[in-house]
Image (tube, rainbow, N blue to C red; front, side, top):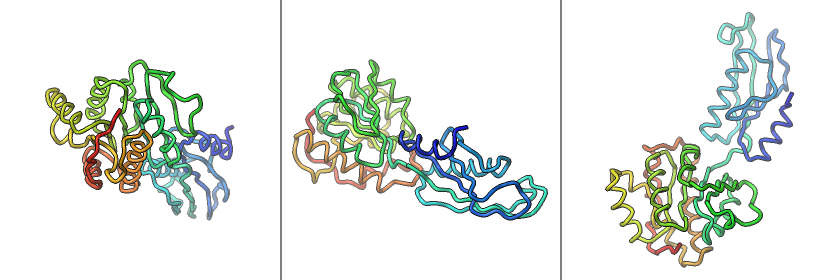
Length: 281
């Protein structure tokens, strides 16, 4: 059996969030032991706190905490009896401890100069990064922890694989590819934040083409282009990268712990001043 302590170590090494569930107190004639633990991830369950309906309810609460990206530990008292399928009275107190919760799932499309400057900055944050490009030779030999390299001949197909609520950054070497990625991301419309590298002129051109494809104005306004905060000046790759990273930090600090969807994620960009500088690819 994969014990809870091994599972916790494996999940944390992969940067996969989970919840550690512990029996803190047990009262009543039940076979459960105080101190028993189990680990709950989004898709798996490791070890046991005694099975039955209580374990099922604990798993449900843990996965709800993961979905809500909750950071704080939580105590829950369960009164044993008919509600938990028990034939006797008593109570069980469980402690739920979120472990390794990331604040952002980030997809970076493009491994050019700005991408190579940006990804190490993002990797230093509490996030997981998917770094996507069709050109394997553009990636550095070693990647920071928490960064997954995805070499794909069809980067647009990777949009469908992104978790809901992702932060999407498009900065490829090809304007047509940038356009197709933009269309795919806006079509999903379940991202937390989407930034496209480029100038105001590029934005105007893209908006015109996207309107021709039927995208509504409200959807287009969710696109940040130029992206990054205006207070960070300059056109060097590292300067642009710092500007983009700063906007992402401001965004996830504002929205962390909330459910992000097409309704409530739109106003996030309004928290930040519009960028006044052009961005070179």
